[in-house]
Image (cartoon, rainbow, N blue to C red; front, side, top):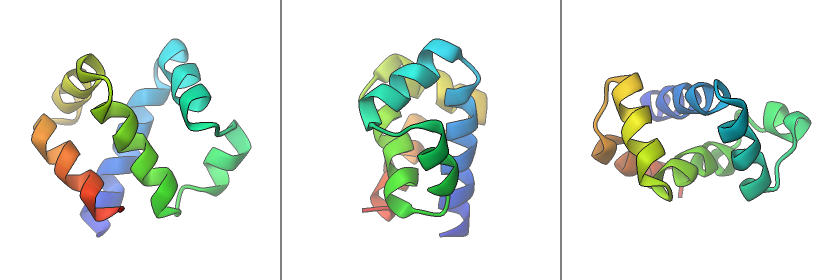
Length: 82
């Protein structure tokens, strides 16, 4: 579980590096910056990060490259938070 949380947080960091992508993530998840900050230990919030990537293949591929993991690993990690 620790590895999954670390990967999800790294993916979130990647998402937040780009303003447009970060805004899209917040819009699609219904989160705001405060609820995101307070939800960093919440499996549902961490899962939403990986769902966001899984639902947009270009981001999934770019994130996996940036994080030095495979897209399949990001998808498999999502299952841990279900």
